[in-house]
Image 1 (tube, helix red, strand yellow):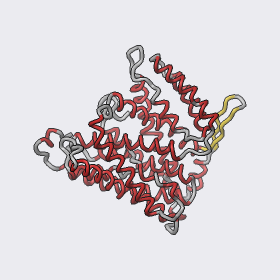
Image 2: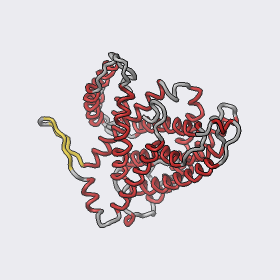
Image 3: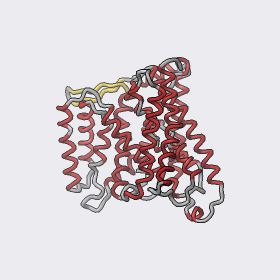
Image 4: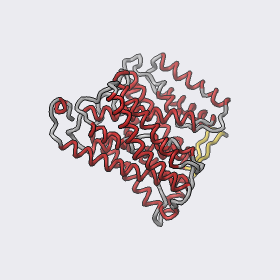
Length: 395
């Protein structure tokens, strides 16, 4: 959980961002070196899991994208639930401005993508540039160092959390396929059982974990993307148990290092391998890369900054203490770091092939530029001597 019991040390966020960058570089090197064949063999490595006569045999890339990423979505869900009950999303007044900025930051990139890919027959990728990578964005913010308003991190975190919620809803609504009502109805059983356990405030998490695995299998078979089982499970974990413990916070604390330093970097290594030698910017590929890239870099910036400016001018909201419009411009840039969620949605939209390589190009180029420009902007702002109430709110 990013903020379950106070702020996570910035060093962890910065280190997590560096590990993620390292995994991405390794993927690019592996896909464009003599090891390219070995890299693909690694991703296609068959792994089977079975109980009795029942067996699920899938390549490694499936277990990363559909299995381990369910744990990633579980941590996202735990954070969302905590923030709604105890944190930043508890007070609706504090959510209005970053919430509307998040909506603008999702709608504008989608429109940019659709405008730049009109007539190309690739509209299924409209949601790719709508998501912000919360881990990457906070990692860049951590690398900027001290001297920034406290409200900047809070605003970015709230925006990114709501952005993740929007991405989860988009995946659930628009990226299901061949829905099987039988499995979908069967998935209600483990959910109901987890809710009963939560109602009873059972201290042990073991039953919920077993039920979560069953839920994942049923959701996988239902046609809804299996990773969403992680979100559903998260909302069934109680905030407090009957012994006075905090199972939600405990589970989040246990999972967070694994997600930050293993699952997300492994996802990046498995999905960011862009073979530059086979890349073509002609036709659909060029339109997809341009739509995704400009959607993230320009669409996010305009959507986040534009909606925030409009609401402030209409007196429907105020900027957090210590923040000015130059700070908001930096937030708009960091929101353009799509990476993990954008690559994930890209895989759902196009699978593997030339289209996905174009997605990788657009996501990587835009995320690198957004992170670089955002970091430079934040470092300049951090070096400024705060004045007035901004000094009281500096980190």
